Each structure stands twice: as structure tokens, then as C-alpha cells.
Length: 117
Image (cartoon, rainbow, N blue to C red; front, side, top):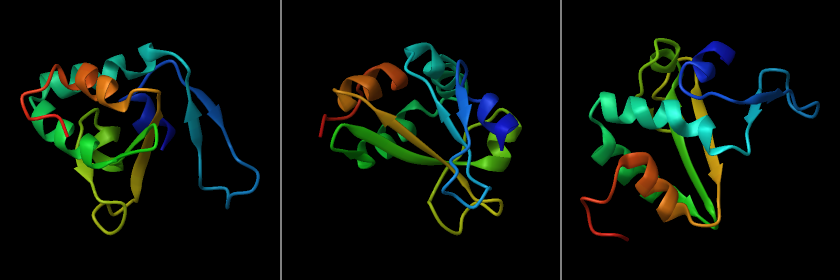
């Protein structure tokens, strides 16, 4: 999983929570640069509109939560998925905590071609 995450995001620190089952890794960053590679892949793969929709659906209380297919991430590609059942190896859960989720979504997806919700 570490390599899959590092293929999509940069400038992350790794933490292994002791209370978890040993299969959970937590990657953290307080730097916007951690999202630059992700942002560039969204643009390169031309999936910004779909990403915008999925991220807006995942907005809640100063957070944006979405899931990525682990196999696709391992190959350096992005494929959004559901939290259960869609990714055979399990998904990568991405949680972005921020003061203005809509601003982060706009920055990541290159603007707003859809109506702001």
C-alpha cells in the first residue's frame, strides 16, 4: 500500500497506528504540496469533472473523503471507487481536512464547471 499511496501523493509522513490491526497505514501531511501530484494526475487523465463530483459528494464538516482503487494507484493511475466491494485489495481512503473544502476541491479540479453545491 505504501508504494500505491506514494505514486499518487508526495511529501507524506507515515504513521502506523498501534490500535489498528497492523494492516492500516496512515499517511499525513500539513503541506499543500502533498496534493500536487494528485492534482496533476487528475488533469493528465482528464477526470477532473468526475473527481469534482465525487469530492463534493464526500464533503462533510471541514473534510473531503473519497476512495481510490489501490491497484490503479500502484500503477500511478487514479480510479475512484466505493468504500466496500469495488477494489479487490481494498480501497485507499483519502481524507483531506481543511477549513474550506470547496476551495480545495476547486484547486484540485481546476475550477468549477458545475454549479457549486
